Length: 201
Image (cartoon, rainbow, N blue to C red; front, side, top):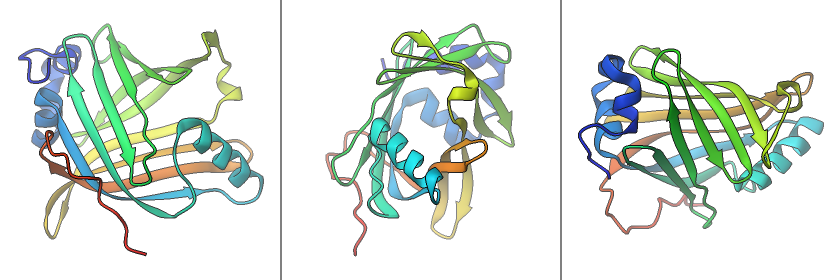
């Protein structure tokens, strides 16, 4: 359950958990919620078409360059759960299950029909995912048939306090970047029922 002394993330990282920034440690020790505005972009030409199709399959709205966004993070002894929601009502659910332990183990992320095998690199207190393999609909998919994924999270300073900076980008040779969404979020009470922050247009 959330707040368990030794949840999946803490157990998987072991002593390396202390290398995370204290705010990331707190988020992955007890769970929480992050809120703010994010940017969403797709490539140009064919890359843009592919990016919009990918976004549609993932449940990411691409009709505006900025959107309100919230993600609720919870932990149990066998999984991490990320529940992102966009201000138009779109939402995802990603479940991460640990295999082995850091640095040689990995995580299995399930989002809809896609299951990714992810390694982790730690750098400067941040966390970067490394795609190791994937399955779609239960079948293994060759890496070259799936866009390259670059995803990270870290803590950075802002005038109004430290923020949780994250970015997720998909690119595919030779088209270049297909889709990206990123933002600098602030912590909010996990039990808050307030809607995600909306962008004034």
